[in-house]
Image 1 (cartoon, one colour):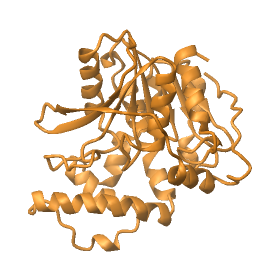
Image 2 (cartoon, one colour):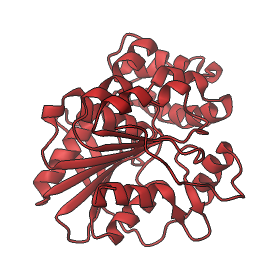
Image 3 (cartoon, helix red, strand yellow):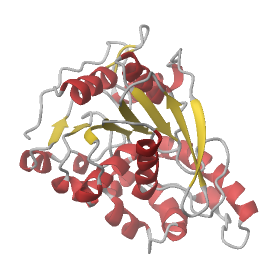
Length: 317
């Protein structure tokens, strides 16, 4: 599909992409969500914690969070609430090491871990009589979702009807090179804390010497993400898991919303050509929104990403 028009406008007090990114992350609160947690044992004898919010529906939305996020993040709970209010069950899953407890294996999660998405999705199908499933992903979770839909379309369960993803770095290398030092250091702090836990579990396989001098994601991914998860180096990791290469193969109607002022996204993360050539891919590029922001009225908890996801996934608009 061609690029679709966006009518999203940020409130006047969020006057740039950084404000639109940071303030909703820091100050948003979502009331009324009470998850029911379930721990799943993975095929490789690890575990993944999923959180249910059921309203008794035969439709289910499966939500994938962003880098170093979890199911408790306001953008996740806000989306869960929006779909519960629309009469749809929700299942939000925490990536390995993201539920508040380190996972058992050396491997953790990465931005191409579609095996785990497939696992929780198929579990949800087994656990409930769902006729329709919708995928939603934010940032890293959006990359995982897009890769999952496009890498082997025939493998995607037929119950998966539509998908919507937001703020997705579909070209990981250029996005990793663009993200500023300020944001990078915030992520590296929490990633480092998790690696310290892994070092205690695997002292011969995790070496944190000189961790403090890492300044960029390519440095981090080259030293940790790639070797731990079976990639040659950071470039190999980025090349193999970036979702942009899988967009032409997607056969499920999918909405990709990337704000033009997103401080995390490079120009390569706006796949206009792919959208114009794939009738199932809808690309929306609002002028504003920041990264996983999309606030329209923070005081009243009004967020464009939620209303847009509901309209696209449930109403087909």
